[in-house]
Image (cartoon, rainbow, N blue to C red; front, side):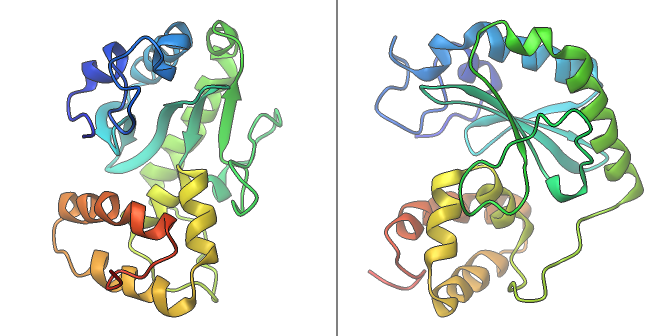
Length: 207
């Protein structure tokens, strides 16, 4: 079960796999870097929350970045990445189906602290877009996907690949199933509930 308290992420992990709260959890390997990213985000004045079992940082009512850890690296992922200018060329695509470079990956525990000035500049840029209410232009061939589902896809390479492999009809079934919820927290919960079905290539109504 995914965590709901922020401190649990830094002490036990996200709760999304069997390695949760064990020495084998990826957060244990990268804890130095994860804590550095946390400090940089909080020092930038971002609000800290838990979303999708991970530390998510917001500003002006918008998601700005999310922290993650896998076996091979830890990361800082940017929402609305299509707006980012990336002057230092540090953003990478999370997977083959990710349309825009949206994540900074770190493979050394001390790498995040060493990049603090660059990260701060990128956070300031993203905060400016949030304050101005700017969003990337919507692709005309894309369905009107709820923001919570878009954000989950952007932050999860496996989910993104599975989503783009779905038939248009199956994608629409999730658009309706998630978008019909009135509250944002309900939409977030539905996205997490449907994750395994999306990964399995099924529609929202499939068994």
